[in-house]
Length: 356
Image (cartoon, rainbow, N blue to C red; front, side, top):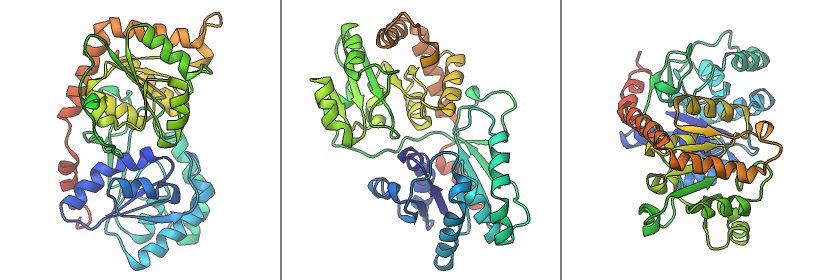
């Protein structure tokens, strides 16, 4: 089974549970990814091969398609997969059609991607002609990691799968898995796309002060390369790389950018979320969570012009910490997520595809 990933480290974390389940079941797997993702793939124990030295950003399928397809075809000359698993990119789908093997798409879908998909596939038409691919069959399976309750009406039919957090680890210390006495714990993170959270132009120190002033313990989870900067900005607050899967169950609130894997980890732990979207997809995610009652959202263009953004975010945090409704709705989502089929269960369906 060949798994593919491009873009941020979060994509590797997203594909890892199913890839690991396949490997644990005795299947031969490889992860084809960008050079920038090699180190994180190695860190979480996935055998990875580099197919391109650049990092593919969201929506760049067409710009890098020829290089990626040629690299994948070269890989297939020595290691021919029986099944290919990809995500938002359609390049692996073209590759699977060229090889004549089943293709599985795994994604975290909150909103329809039909318009983007059509545009990308039109852009890939020259590469399809070059490779002799007349048409692209529909994926043999679409795996959606989004809990059904958060999917909008008209969402495509999909095989649900439970989110199983898989992130780069760090030495675990007692404060990571225990709750603080007598005060709520708030986690701030920007995921793996950015070094630290961009809180609408508000210095991180100001946001931390708002939260600690409200009586909360604050943790700042960020990429390792941001640790020195965080130490200067946040003083005695615990900051740096923190394994979210360990810390999340001890948190009362998470403040972050709305990335899918961060959202999924918090849903898994039943944590209410305050979202500050940094891109369109993050906004879709935020709207779904807010509609369910498990989150609030703050957007730059909608902030009160007469109010400091840090104060506004702090006020939203206090509102969520004082209203048990957000925690209750978050617990309902966690229960729904826990009821979904595990990666090992979904794997059994994938195993039947190559012989179909």
